[in-house]
Length: 79
Image 1 (tube, rainbow, N blue to C red):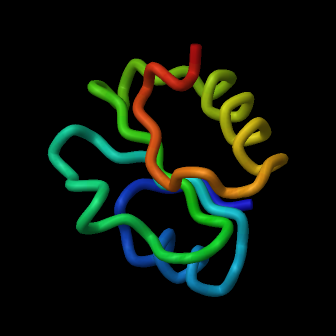
Image 2 (spheres, rainbow, N blue to C red):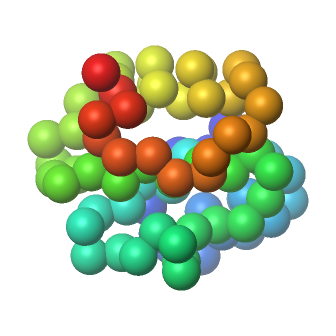
């Protein structure tokens, strides 16, 4: 598993098929800059500094256990 923000290593991991969760702030455009790959997911949040690791892990476990329905999620998907 790879967790990261919108950086080169996150994109490389996604391209190799590694299950990847990219964390985006509101300043990144998910639809334009999301990592590519069947196992890649993007979570956009209003404030990365207040995002709790426990919520990210729970979310990641949920979205990787089912077929890819949508690659992009907002923080409201955590609740």
